[in-house]
Length: 237
Image (tube, helix red, strand yellow):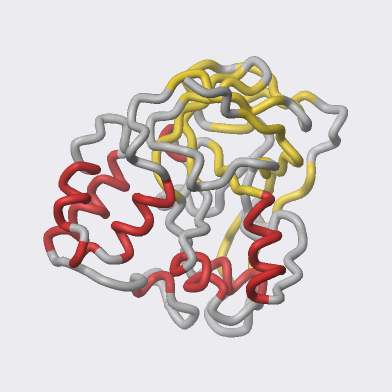
């Protein structure tokens, strides 16, 4: 196996606050996160970074979504291709990595970082809150359509991590199921029926994502989902 590694650029944690974007009722979210002191080590348990919180525990958090990871390469992409100067942690990620992106990372990959072993569980499924919090029109749908979602990891071994720690691949079981590939198939389930059948056999795929992808497969869905549209209003409103 080739050496695949990068470094953490920043680590972020959030606390729950009420967000009012002027388009819907205010809602609780820990999307806006603060950068962790680069000299501080942070403990990671099976539910994620010890100082991180979630405002919506139905759709965020849990063992399969313990930590959200995003590539610095995509900030460069949106700047160069779409002229978007995005501030750090625009996407509410917990960890920004430097040189790897969704085309380099596969479902089931295990990465050593500091004392922690992470396992890739699913692509992130960006929702309307990206556009809502940032105030950038159609940013959520752009992220989805460009297959620049980032990904979630579960925690196999708890421990401490710190900014600038190495993020190194230690095992790979499903090299064909990159995060980018899974995103491409999910966005156009109608034309990727056979590919999705194979993805659904992956035992490392998070249960909630499996169910979501299975639904798109069954109904041969294409394009973004309604909860990824800027004007989406939740059922709680």
